[in-house]
Length: 390
Image 1 (cartoon, helix red, strand yellow):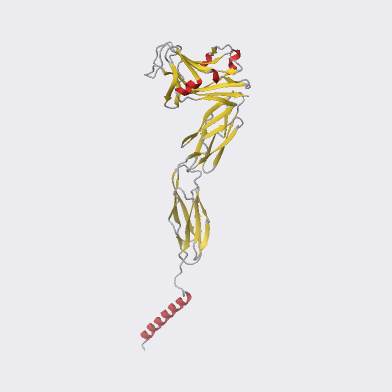
Image 2: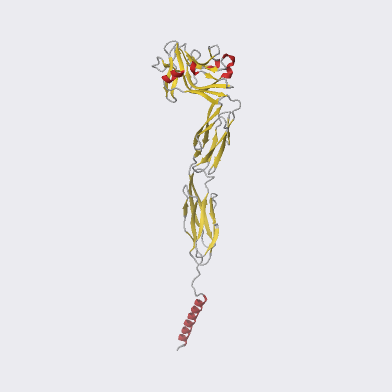
């Protein structure tokens, strides 16, 4: 064998031996590191969901350490760190809408491994508009009740901002304003009858909010309702009242578009145009058999609803009471002229009349007088009630 051939053969043997030794030092092949794998690239919570999950896995070899971060304060997650080899870790993501206004929101969480690149998950949610809900539509305080409660809640999303009107001195509301997201607010309503005359007191509580308003009708009673008069037909009117006129213009029943049947000063006169006549003097008085014994009461109040529209100063409607001398009397504050613009409730306390009226038996009525040719509607009466305190 030549010297050159011998040297080449020796080189081949040495190279093969080197390869053999290298294979013995690393029998498993090239090294493979841990590799982060997440199951979702986005989570959409919509308007209802508060929790969703995703999985963290390891597609490589060995142990993967991971951690989660987010700069969005309405996003939370559990756990926020961990390790995985061959198993998958489940992460729960939660969102909190409590301090968010209505609208759509986007956020991000970042999963960072101890080796390799971080991966992001987009978080989306919708906050519905707030919705005002109150637990009652009316509150009725009888003669002995002085406190009720109702609740305000937000049946939508976001933040409900609310405040409550307080429209009467005898009515107290607490609290009167606030903000609510998921909690329920308890509202206390109290009434104070001190200094009030006998009667039926009504007000509307208005709950205002950033998404609308709701009303609560409040009725409060002091004393007893001993009699009431409502009007349906002229026959009903004539059973209890004497209607007189210096002419042919009698009080009678007409239909009001908002209140239904009411009594009008010219309801049975010449009123083709819906106006009262000139030179009228018409009255409606309770019949003698309707006279009420009021001797057991310390206070008597007559309440009624009225709408009037007359020629200013010349024409008027009045409320009068029969005196002990069988004459009929009215006060300057029970005579009205001009217009009150809309239906209003009036109260006449007999204690304000002094000695001119009977302390034993009660009869009263209404009169209408016109001295001017006008283009006005006159006077309308409805819902007469007599209240008393024993």
